[in-house]
Image (cartoon, one colour):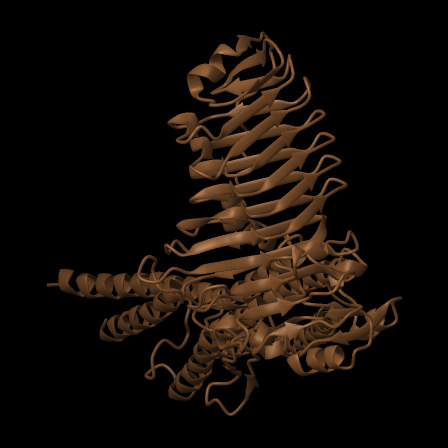
Length: 623
């Protein structure tokens, strides 16, 4: 019985071991089971765990490289787009200086004060071409037969505003208090931008073209943009200052011309004075004079032909002491806070139109008479006074008109009921000469507001230019490069990346970062002035695109290396875990067979113990 009992205990103990293997699947679950296998498997599993952690780091490294590669691909498209814009701009770009020098009639092409003065001093006749921006430190006096033109004279190379060819005059430092002198006949000044700063000296002049008694139709001003600065002039009436943007001479105006002064000091600025002017062939002159005294046109004679347009905005007087005649569908607009037309003669012929809005539309005073002559029934005089149409303090305002001539008074259309030649004109007398005239046409003033033009045109041109598009694309490219980071790392901003391939960091790869901003690639935001500037931008872009392609190739190589090591590490982890399993995992088939055998042995041992017990009981029955 004792032997059978010991056998049952041994079987139960072996069953516990087999049952534990079946429950855990492990034949070695602790060092007690098999120290060698247990510690060997632990070592393999620990390395596999370390490599698994490195595998995660490799995966994040791959994503960092991938983010840089994606940014390079998109950035390359941006630069290719910028190159296309530059190529488009190149089609209408300003050629190099040599191109202009080869044009007929050119005596010199200058881009500095020294070159300009040398060209003038040489006495050589012809066109002196201003190439770029030049600042002068003394009066420029053209000699006979010399003209001054910008590059736009030879083609549509420059914007409508902010011309490429510029002359800057700071007259406060000039010995003659004059910016430019051109006293001879046959002068051409065309396609130029003038920036004129006036000194605190009476009689200073921007462009001095000689005495108007010397008129010849050979003198031409064409496509000029004149900016006036009176900020250095003492406030009137502390010191009375008469200054002139254009003074003297007889000339023809062609193209589109603008004169602008935005300083509101109480300086007396007569923008155009003592001149004889003819405007033909759809020519335009915009005068925006915001000086607090002075006039747009003063002491001058103007003849407007062929759909020409004179537009005056003046903070004080519009036209003073001048004779103005309109022919052939020409138009005059005058806006003056004080007076529109005073001390002079206005002749309106053919189908011409005159629009005046001022405190007093017409003004005469003492010995300074004013006369208005409407010589055509197709002509229109449009008046929008804020106080009185006619201010006549000394019986010196004259009006003549043909019967049927149209007059608009504050939006209401009238016509003259008869031919008239009246003296001592005032509003009441004037209105008695008119009959209401039914017409569906809108005769209310539609001012061409040159104030807004001058304030906004340069910005609008900049927004719409190829140059602005080019610079905008570069800014977007830089923003893209800045956004190419992954988990705080940006390989395109110079940050490097280290990826470890084993647990002791003895095997690794360093991915060096690059700097891919436009400034790092040698691309600059440019103020394109000519074809050479644009070609330089295109060259920079081509080199930058090649550099980006090189970066993409390098990152592609690193990407391939890291992904290959990533695959190897995944396979190695499987090998390590499989080796550990072979050392520690139980054979479930074998352990199941062992359990069945032990259960059978247990049953036999129990039966044997029962037989032994019966034998003992039989002996006990003998007593």
